Amino acid sequence: MGLRGPTRSPDSRRGAREAETSPVTVIQQSLEAPAWLTPVEKVSFAALVDEAKSAGLSVLRVDAHAYAMVTRLRLCAQAEVDGNAVARIMRTLLPWEMAVGLNAMARVRLGIKQQIKKTSMTARLLDIQRDARK
Image (cartoon, rainbow, N blue to C red; front, side):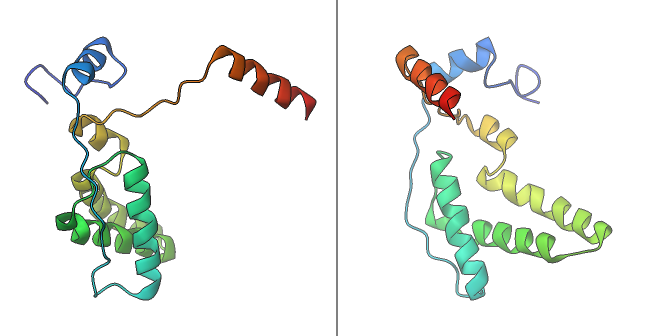
């Protein structure tokens, strides 16, 4: 709950107005995977950092440990076959994802709005025509 009630939807009028008036400064630094990650986890770590950068999140060196924990927990959840164990891992994973902004609700709280690629009407018509030919 914020000062004016629950967290606003980024598409609401108030959310759009606040997004226009208070731009978010995004800082992106290069991250190196911590030494304690396995080689498979390091590959997944690099993909996760690229995902965060493409989502418009600030990627700081100080967050390397949090990204590493998210990577390890995601791989553990994928490898686990027991449903109860997966649920426990996912409960542990959620706060880590919220901390670095890797889910939609965390990005709303951080004030990061999804960048919607605007296309012209001509481009849309050409896409429709191209899809009709297939």
